[in-house]
Length: 554
Image 1 (spheres, rainbow, N blue to C red):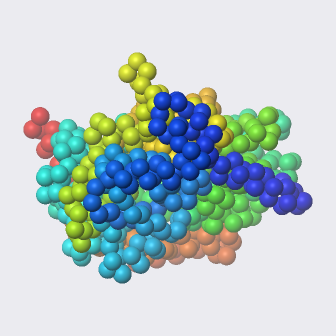
Image 2: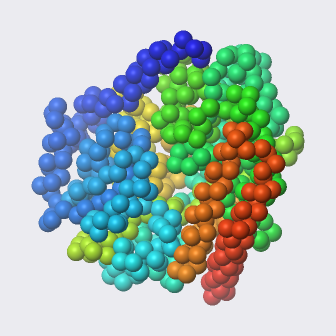
Image 3: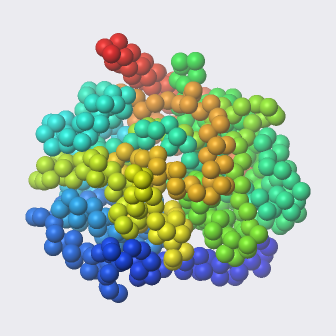
């Protein structure tokens, strides 16, 4: 949009937020009249919560976690979200939630750990803890769960015994279980993100869906010059600069990714490869031309939503659900002719196959650990184990039977409360209210969730396109490391990551010349990046050997 659009954008944003924040009794009354929830009065949430509190046992357990953004936009606290109410009811465990500010989990947990006042359970990316999870155990922050899982977690124990490849990824190299994990066992669940464009704009400008980097330049330039778009391309820059590029968007065209990867059995680190210089040169040029969001390093998910929904941007890198599934219905509310389309991961030359694209690990980075100071270990373990059992599996993936899903011919089908919400919540928002299927948690994700969640043809085509890469060949699995390895790797990568982000920004913004890349690579070497690669290589070889040994027993 042009200069006069600030006020217009503000009005649209107000409308959008109004849609998002309106979850009322109309939602409940539209559901099956036989369900208890549909019979609640105007104080439905309070009444349901009161019933839950009456039905749980003993002292409340404390639970530290960041609320998912799709839920937080509707109900700002955990206790207001129906899923968390039902989870407490089913397990007869009352929870007191400690909720850090959105996008500030890392800083908040550092403060929490330093305070010494630890909750019973903490949901966090424990692999990112300095020194790794084994160090967190040794320092007395979290509990080694081996004995507790043996004694109180039959569902998780059974799953891991049937999936040894998963079992090896949720333990440290010293053999310690440290969290209740989020598991995406089905390969089809692990690709859900890629490039998205305004198809109606492409049609208006007489342009096709871009495939090569050159075609992308043509499209973004047309958005800028012929439509007057302020920020043609936007992507996430929070919690770290270029965060939205990490999955392989644009950077993958140069044969690398902004992280560790494996090529011919050898671990490599993309930001020190020559291809990273070429990627920085591209984004430096695009930034100078005004094709990239001027504030790209500060873009969070809400900012990205606003840019795409108000027409400030016409291209982004985001999910099939939270992106296409959320944006398209809102766009069509304001403009029935609005269209979104997915684009394949870009390549340099026509006919090439993309080497990289977004692909999640089978085991999610985030998991729930139990504090070493908890006086309710058995109760906490049994509650967390619930998600891996048959009943918990259905709650975490599909929600409340008769309300958010119904069984039809043995298949759990989402109701209109999820897929055609009466209060105009997007499916991603409704799902986040009643399930954890569309993000993470202590459970195994079910492919049947995706089969229904991605109901728009644009979403189905997006998954097909984004999955058509060689990302699986080059992916580095979640390789367990010893405490010593984790501590050394963490210390190195803290400095390396800071340097990569700082120099990437400086080169893209034009603060440093492109020729500074060579000196930057030397700085990476002085920070022992080669040692970090060696540690990853050792862990990878040990992991591969353990899998070979396991297969040899079969």
